[in-house]
Amino acid sequence: MITNEDVTKLKEVFATKRESDDLKTTVDGLVEKVGDLSTEVAELTEKVDAVDVKLDKITGMLQDHRQEDAAGAAHLARHDRQIAALAAHTGALIPD
Image 1 (cartoon, rainbow, N blue to C red):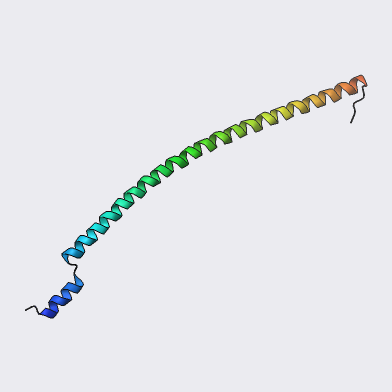
Image 2 (tube, rainbow, N blue to C red):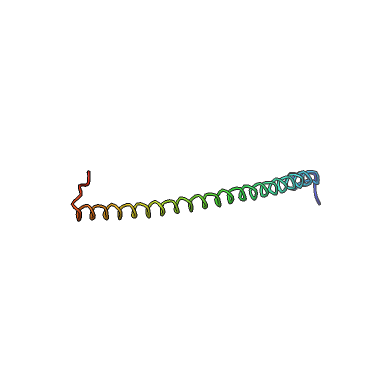
């Protein structure tokens, strides 16, 4: 037979209906907050992706600019060599 002591111990070990309802409310609130957080993370991910795309475009533009600069430098170097060769061939003086 169950004694009053047993009932008291059982109440300490197991949750009452009220405690269970409180726990359910708490868990539901946490689930809602996690859902909100998930939405915010998705929005942040979209923003980061947009920044990433813009940075890729800028990086591409910089690479194009570097290639143009290198081509221009090679072109000018070739002209310098040609001018020096013409000057040497014609005997013209080239200032240093």
